[in-house]
Length: 129
Image (tube, rainbow, N blue to C red):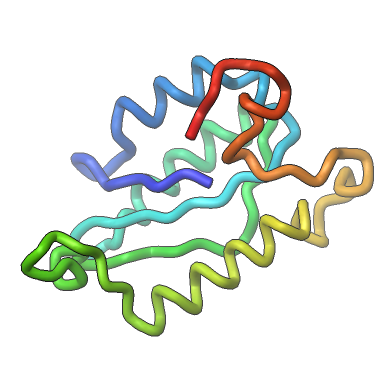
């Protein structure tokens, strides 16, 4: 799972760098996105990243968490306070990731059921948390 901001109508360099650096460890793994930003909720970043992760052989799940106007969900102590819609979306995304693959993926049975979050650690590679 990647948590990504929208940066100039696209994804940020740090996320692309992580994908490029660990692409072998993440090949054939499911990937989900939590995006945030202004009115578009980071969705333009995710649109671009879906092209990148599929090219790298990852399998994006259909559920996502999109957080518009994120500053409205951060309190005076800089603590993120999700609303009901955000929490429901997060549960749906985690449910799909924990199932391993979208049901429509014909390769689902052939791959291990592991989320992309800790693959580098599980396979003895460089950690990614």
